[in-house]
Length: 169
Image (cartoon, rainbow, N blue to C red; front, side):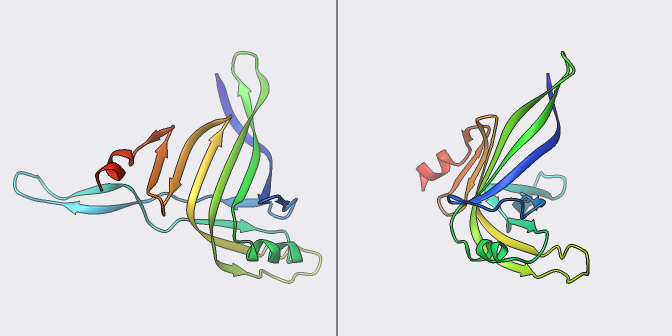
């Protein structure tokens, strides 16, 4: 059995441009379903029903070391952004480390940016927030999540959960 222990390292790319070493931390989106309250005769109270494939605003936040021209390249970048990492795994049988690739691909527009701080001898830690309309996650070559808001695609573990809905509308 392999247990994920730490993200050994990662890089972020915009198309073929590598934003090397600029973002020590990225906060991935929080998927919160849109819901509708269900209540009626024969139901013992309200139920919050999640609407399959419909989510609230999705954001991804990149923290940078300091302000630099590469950060502004990232702010003005309008295409796909890809995060490629190596997840360190503990093999419980052998007690040895192994590694699995993790790839997160997002599309969206910059929603806000914070220039951070000017600090003598320190990091400024500016931040860039993107509103995400597309997100795909692949672990060890397996697609585990894909959301495409504009094309009504919602897949978990390779299962297209909106295929039937798209065929009916």
